[in-house]
Length: 126
Image 1 (tube, one colour):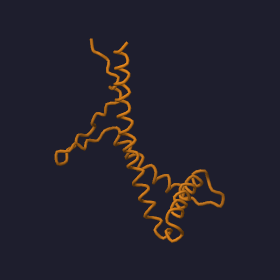
Image 2: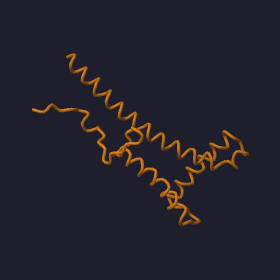
Image 3: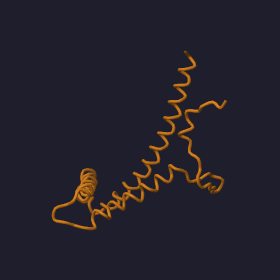
Image 4: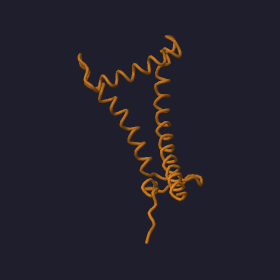
C-alpha cells in the first residue's frame, strides 16, 4: 500500500529538461506561469492604449492608474526633474515585478513544505 505524501501536489516536475553549465534550468509549470504573466501585462497595456477614447474604458482607467502610480512614485522620490528619467524606473519596476513573482513562487513552495513538516510533527507528537 502506497503512503500518501501531502507534498506530492506541490512538486514541480520538469516539462522540458535543460542544463546550462551544470545548472538545472528546466521548464516547469511555475516557469510557464511566469512567462504568461510577463506576456500578459504588456498585452494589456497595448490593448488599453490601442483604442483611445474621450471617455476611457475600464481597461484604460486601470492602465492610467498604474502609470500615474509609478509617475507619482518617481516625483515623490526624485522630484520633478526625475520625470525625464521616468522610463528607466518604469522598466526597472517591471523587471522587479518579475523578480517578485519569482520570489513569491519560492516563498509559497517553502511555506508549503514547512507547513507540512510542522503538521507532520504535530501529528506524531499526539
